[in-house]
Length: 259
Length: 209
Image (cartoon, rainbow over the protein chains, first blue to last red):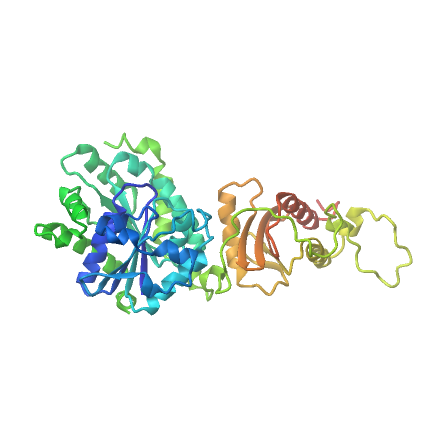
């Protein structure tokens, strides 16, 4: 199994949108995918269903690792796509944000996910690279970093890189899949200039070719509690996430990705 | 075009950090799993500082530097000074001094394992039987130094009842990294005492520069 943390230094960059739609793309491609909401704000749950907000989830497991994973897994209509909500326990109840305090439990959670036959565990984390998010990254095989295409977001890149370097000390096997530009507005000079600046700043292999545009469809999909590809007019937007998936698959060892 | 962004960051430094991240970590090739964490690892200590446990071996109220720990008694010695000068007691073959330092760590802090690495990660002394912790200790020491902590020490809870205390110490021979497996994280006064002791022990004899 491959575990991928979807994380960023800054909040509001589209992590949840990327997580839901990328997980959906993998599941459509036949990859047995578990999407885990590790954001105490429960954005995946909020985005998908009203009921999922009431489910036991990831943070409940951190408080009580005796909870069997089957009780946390929420199936969807797509057989290859399942969810784990963030749960009723909050980050605070899980013991605050002490870095490393939950490392063993997060790793236990991922071992349990692997033993349930999933090929991919995609984890939507809270913003920042510390606390439980740090533990998730320090336990994952890879990290994907959504980055909003605007100047303020790009300015946070040095802090992001420093944080990732620290986390790599804890998890030397962590593979940095790269930065994915989000909320790109081709009709706004500041947005395209920020995207261009990031591409010049970072090594080419660190920035995905695929960019996620700012699109009203995402708001509509979120309002209806659906991945964008399920909308009648969401085929084009789904193609963007399929392209991102293809880039990720090329970066991962395909044998282990499917094994 | 770059005005809104480039004044805020150092492109050369950003590039260096980014390229480092994209390289496979060479340490992963080593036959270590999880950089020294094993199934017994329960997480990092979240804060510094509880004092050594009451159950630790009897210790004086103040921490006695290892200089003052009596050297092993030599049978032929007919004179045992009541108040040996510390720098005389501390001298002797380097290994003897390190061994006395280890004994002091055991007595004062209940250390069950002590190892010392140089800045390249080479083992200078290790009787800890925790070889797999070397990489972790060196990595943590390097990371903490980059953050310019006041003392630079870091501790990691490695099992329910033991903590790896990592203390980088500048000595006359360069930076040494001390790793000690102790029941609880050391407080700052203890860390300072350990740093002072190791620094003295790893100093060349007077007259040798």
